[in-house]
Length: 287
Image 1 (tube, one colour):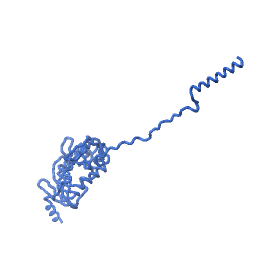
Image 2: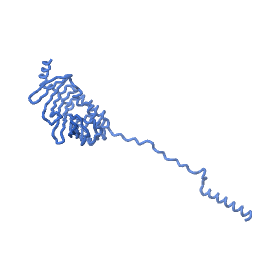
Image 3: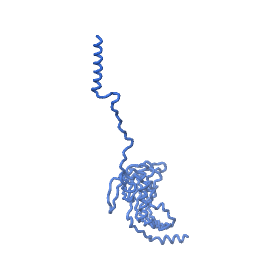
Image 4: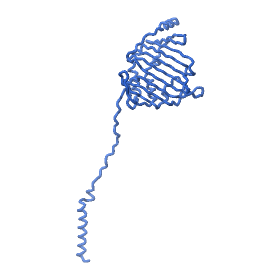
């Protein structure tokens, strides 16, 4: 191969390589496009809050126990009302062990009030006795009449307001802290919109009301339903559960049921009982 042939081949190679760059139309070192990675979200989207149906209550259930209990107490403290309650304990064979029924009429501002309670059984044995206790107060003194068969006894003592404060917020704080609640519907009674609250699970069993049981464990078969209005007043509730009472190292199965309802809110009247003078005379003689 002579010098002129070698030169021709070298020129041809240069032309071919130059043609490759011309076909691509870019320089591989300077014109390669840069890929920018997509931004990765770091925050979860803010969920839409559930609307409040009543103080502390949403469709998910009781979300603020203290708020609901406080609203309940505040609303009833400024209104007269009547409270009807029942506490019952039965043995596994359905024999009645203890029962207490109470009707309490409370004036505006919580004074005066008049309560009638009927007790059946002592709580430690099947029912063998019954008694009715009537209590009335319009101040710091509590007047009582205890009726057993044909015997009635009167007494006067200092008023224990904590015991008789049936709208006490602490009671409702414990009750709703014990349960996992949810709202299952809505209804209207006497022109008042009410929300139906249900519970079947116990989150804090130590807060469940113990009734007359000295000790209980492993609450089972829990049933709870309540009606709550838009002000936060728990108009009524029913609670039932099975528990074990330990007495003398023997486990006894009991079915505990409790119910409470408020009526005549804003229209309850409280009158002095007809036995007031007899109770007052008894106290005067004792002094």
